[in-house]
Image (cartoon, rainbow, N blue to C red; front, side, top):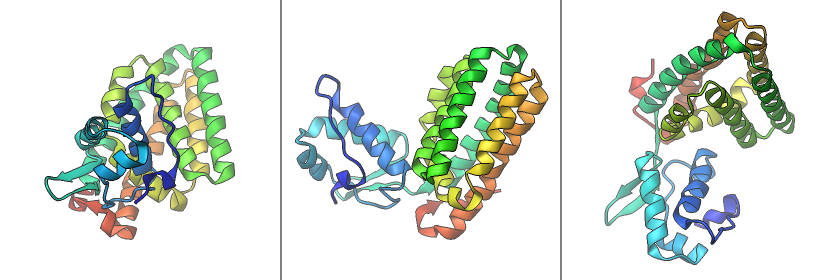
Length: 235
């Protein structure tokens, strides 16, 4: 399989190659361009990008640590199935952390925070208008990262992202059924709560926003049974 069919990668030879390959493949996996169960050929990657074995090996090792690929020694390397148990746990952590984070941001209602969030939500609305689900998901992630950055909990964002690939795929697969418009609306309610200094309103909007995820997981487990595992842990 030619992995470049899902998007071209231009390698920057002035930077380390392995992280670039890992980022590229991660994007392909999270966007479902590389679906769960898809074989990933080490030799194919080396030939496609004109690379030696080392950067490809290091990139795949990184993705294996994140749970996005599964390596069967002497057999095959496959895109991992979506771990519904892990998705549920990451969702649980994000809901708790982000509800407290927006409450914290409302205490200061800093103008630069409000501007950054409104700009990010405008980008999200633009993706909605284009019906661009992968672009919408990236814009949504940018919105939530602003919350972590401005709440000064950047390290928590990095920790959560290492295991968020399963949840990201759940959200992308369910998004067409649940709709992008409601996400934009709830983001506006979160921003309005922060801007008004109303931490409870902001937190309530965040909880409602996050409350959609269990329903998403149920839909994905029902509609894409071959893509998931550990679905018995769904609430």
